[in-house]
Length: 500
Image (cartoon, rainbow, N blue to C red):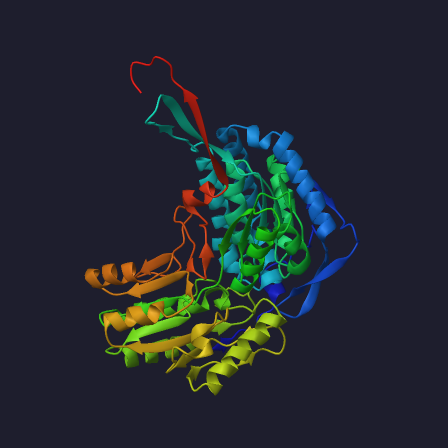
């Protein structure tokens, strides 16, 4: 591990924070209580600014605005083509502010500025454009009935949606949820994570500039146990879409069930395996394994936190990965030479270090890393454990940090068994040159996405979501648009028709 000592101001001008209030019915407003909370820069641990703290009363106001916009406003009644044009304008505005938006996510979440500029922000615009193109391709079906009736289905927007999004990809998660819901004709209330509220408020401002009517998109910043809980249990929200931990996902489902039985979709935790077989290219496999766990400082639900290596190449691959990890540059995320910034906050920093401690105590072999680095901020060295057993905490729990667990296997059958030995089922990776192995293993692992000879290969057209305790419902692809639609059957008699 190499540490960068760069200074942010020498790389980029830090933007002034423009938006800190709640966005309700097209206006930025203070919270009803007048309370605010601090948002912290994980590079330093210092306060960036104070943001309005929304609570149940603010959620009520936002839902009231969204309900009025859905029941009486133009958005659900526009043609899909017209909605698509507005979403295209929204995407253009996002692209016009790439540098500023990337910088906001860097100071609020510790994300690499270079990755935000080249990845997160442009990909958000791509999502908007993808669903803009899908907005006018929502079709029902004409049905052939067995009786003297004509029947067809209509696809209608589900109504008012509550989106509760996590802190690891503040921009990406915002648009994963908002884009298909807007395309479907829904109105919504978005609650960004309390750790990373800033970019969501900026996107609310751009949405209004793009021509999205007042009340369609509302943003409530605040805490999960108050604002998030109010959304999950609200009697006038028709659906809630949540991405986050499995623990909180349970609470969202319980609140939905005990309120109005609203529809729920959940994208939850993961402990994704990367299976590397004997015929793999060592260099390529090592790169995939490191990117899979260290990208975004390990704060990614699909991280390849369990790396299963066939015994024939185990020693060579472990040596290669350890060498590469020691060259990984940790430091100021504005520095273009840096590979890894700080964990999002002190809580997550302490959690990751706690799991590293568990790994040591349980007998795993620490090959590299394992310590905090830097004099301030929440930086952790890339960490690799070998000789990890399936029953160790570092092999079972989602750590959400730069911590890899290495395990060895002999046969394909053993690899499949180890890969499936988890309560999660979000993603998996396979590295092999053998098509038969790739086909067998990809069909045997119980996970929502399987990457073969690649990893973290996301695309707007490719549905993403989990099996088992990784949740249900898909983000991305047309499947995401469909989850914001109701299917209505319409049946009418046919009299004296020459055929049915």
